[in-house]
Amino acid sequence: MPALILGALLFTVTACGGGGSGSGSGSGDGKGKGADSAQSKQSEAVVAIAPKDGASSVDTSGALKVTASKGRLTQVEVKDAKGEAISGSITDGGASWTPATHLAASTKYTVHAVAKDSEGRQAAEDSSFTTLTPKNTFIGSFTPEDGSTVGVGMPFSIRFTRGITHPEDVEKAISIKTEPAVDVEGHWFGNDRLDFRPEQYWKSGTKVTVSLNLDGVEGRPGVYGKQAKTVKFTIGRNQVSIVDAKKHTMKVMRDGKVFKTLPVTTGKPGYDTWNGQMVISEKLRVTRMNGDTVGYGGEYDIKDVPDAMRLTDSGTFAHGNYWGGGAFGNYNASHGCIGLRDERGGYDRGLPGAWFFDHSLVGDVVTVKNSDDRTVDPANGLNGWNMSWSDWKK
Image 1: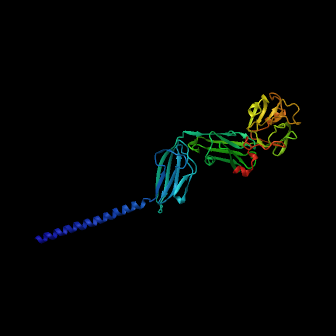
Image 2: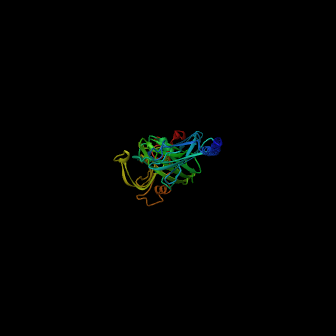
């Protein structure tokens, strides 16, 4: 009897042990497969975003970078608060992403990045940060104005309120597109002025679009741009006027053909007019001309010069002249300006001074030849056409 009981107990234990083992083995296999399956779905790729999530006062240049280890980046989206995307490129075979441009100041950005490992499994990371608010800023004043129609010699010229010590970064932030397409290059005059022009005069009808993406550009240490603007202008008809200082004439050329010939007077000996190509940068129906402002103190002060058009920053104008007597077409009598016969007040719009004013655009070219003075400095006014294309691009 005791032996039978012992056998029954052994059987029970064996049965329980065997049943537990079978059940446990089945459960273990099931759980093992589930764990292995979950593990197989998890990507080994690791995405890292700099700056860290929630960072503030982030620099607008050089701080943003996305990287991937044990995998490669397949998608990176960086957007500002308005949902506008920041362009950039994935490099190093998918190991990193960097923005193609600087970031705007005082702006919150969101980053979404995706990477894949060698098995094609995805890993994603999201982050956000806010850029710095600069204490010192600069802007640029520019010409021509948005929406204007200008002459074929008009460069796009921008003057900055602070001297720029990082010119490459500033120039990179200004893009120019033209229709039809033409190569446009920039040239710095000093550290506060940047002009853009093509190799030859613009073609009539060209449409120019300038994007000033200066917001956040560090123009000099600790000084950031705060300007984001698009400027559009159109090139009008082709007019280039040729002044012969010895013949005392101006030939107004339209599309290379003589449109009208006008008698002029230019700078008298000792006050000779500059030679070279000069661009009309400003038109003034009436203005005051005082010798004190250009180093000719006491020699003249005319309060009502009619039909004046600026050619240089140093004070050279093509303007109407009602006091020149018989000088026009006969001899040179001015202090360096190009004078055309006009009347006080400029009421007779058929006289040469008034006619030329009415038939000229800002951006038209006036070229002087056969004067006894040297060629005008390219930086004196919008006169970079007096510089070779190779020097312009240096």
